[in-house]
Image (cartoon, rainbow, N blue to C red; front, side, top):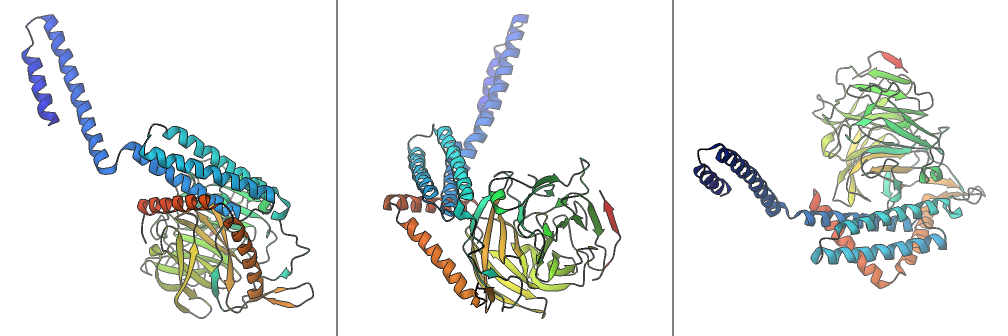
Length: 503
């Protein structure tokens, strides 16, 4: 229709053209106006078609804003679980009340007033900053750090159990230090049993390309991590090259016995980097069935994690896919000194159908996506016996996508990088005895975890005492947020090579 009317208008203008210089100028002027009008009409046609298919721009902005508010609600709930003083609880209660207020305002605006979206966005940003202030207040409160003189001595890393039984609800620690735009990465502690850096934490967000591992931070304690106070911040691109050959790719990095291990950038090689000297060693994996690289066999919904490093009570591991294994998960032990890999254990699970894996006592555990709020640990492979099988343990998530998942034998926790947020889980094992009381009496893990559950129940009961109106608003908003998130993305051998060192 646009082309027909534009052509008619152009013909009229050309027919009006007298044969003099002034008229020629007018012809060119009218001709330019018609062409410009045709362009504008074509653009309007495209915008109208987009609005018909996808909704108006303001509708899209409101959906984005509602998702952001739902995220704030989820974060506030997780932060409230870590509150240890009346002052911090009061701060969080007030914050939740204000989040409810802005939520009600946005819901009204969605149906009545679509011109104040910028004002509402500004209010959400203010509330996000206040939530960060609450996190820092909790980190500084005396009750945050446990009194080691009163707690029983705990022995970890013994493997005296019959496998993983369950995991706790997620404990949200903080957004990674680079911010919400950096959704991919890894974090945790030193995964070597008995390491000298057992109290240190590391956070390794990837660049925005969701491929390059370049900059990390190392923290001396959890409190310093909560306050963004690093022991060291450094870049693997030590020579500031455009093509960083000492950088890594994918979120499969792990800190093991004081060194980072990762897939070297754009190569089938393992790298080892000392975070204190920044000396980088590299070994090309060249054998009969080498690991894939460059996003050939990564995890589902995660890029470039072809090689996933892991540590447990048995040592350092590499989980990868390969062509000869038809893309199935392959498990190998890695010598942390030489970077040479051992013989493979080949599983029956396709790597790009899993969301992530981790190792405990030489047993591989694999996860798959259930929905936007839960993962399922559904499969295991025991390298000690060669047995494999199915299981079912559900894990609650703070955000939809699992970017990395690692187990630490020194505290028996799982560390998840969850769309930019740092989350951990306590683990529970079958027939496990791990604690020694002050009187030398053995305490079963069942009793210890029941006590922790009792504390959690008290916190939950305290939160339930909030006003029923606030709970109703939070519940309603959570449902809207879940709907938005689901709507957005619903899915229910040998040794070889030369060791080279570079600085």
